[in-house]
Each structure stands twice: as C-alpha cells, then as structure tokens.
Image (cartoon, rainbow, N blue to C red; front, side, top):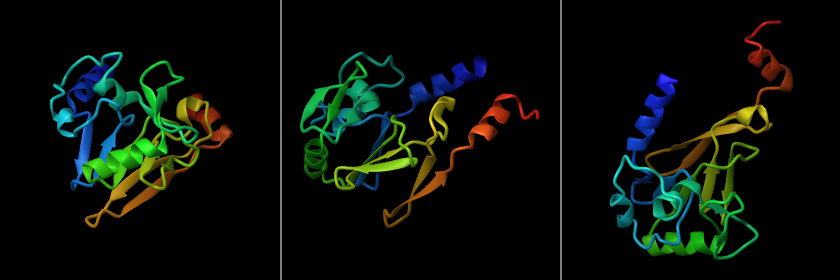
Length: 168
C-alpha cells in the first residue's frame, strides 16, 4: 500500500498534459469545452485534488464518441463526450496535428478517431482480467511519425496460471 501511495503522489505532481514539438497534445482523457487556449493548462497547479467538473476533470475523464457531434453528457457520470467536429475544430484552432489519449479500453491496444486526428492508446492488455484486449505503446520519432508496439493479450489459460502465481 505504501508503494501505491508513493505512485499516486508522484502522478499527482505530473503535468496533466504534454505537447510534443508543438504538434501533438497528449492527455489521459480528452478535450474540454472550457479549453479555449492551451495556455490555460499551464495555469493548473499540481499537485491538486481533481474536481468533479471543469478543465482538469475533462482532461482526465472526457471521451470521444463517434455517434455524436459537439458536446454531450458522459454516460460514465463524469465529464463529457465529444464528437469528431470538436476534435477537428480544436486542432485547427491551436495549429496541432494530433490528440493522443488513453482512458478507454480498445480491443487492439490503440484506435483512431476523427479521421486519424485523435488516437486512444491503452497500454494494459487483458484489462482487469475482464477484457481480451491488447495493449499498445506509441512511439513518436523526430519527424513526428507515430508507430505502435502491440502487447498481445494473454490467453485465458495463461491468465489463470498467472492468477494462481504460476503454479500448475
């Protein structure tokens, strides 16, 4: 428990977004209707408690939704969902090329949205032992070319063996 708390304290001190070479913005969740300038992100003091609403909450918990346009309430009960139009408008307004996010299980470890203007990268294969998803890691080279390494899900037999501590 002590190590887990140390990790939580460390994560609470990290910036909530990163921008790579002024072209790729990365965050855990997604976009926010309150985000009118990327400079606003620099004004979020860390560490801090995550509020139930607002910019920081959205950067951590909002989700893209292919079946909508604009902003809508999120079925998760926190933050918003946003459509392809929101991604396109955000990138154009801020002269960015790509939004990179995590926060949602995707079957193949990564999944594009909004005509490849947003990608969800989920690094945990077999999430919580309940999903048969792959995980992925994204690498960005010096020309901003993105590539993905896939972490294949373990088979059900491997998962059971790991849960028993490797015993046969």
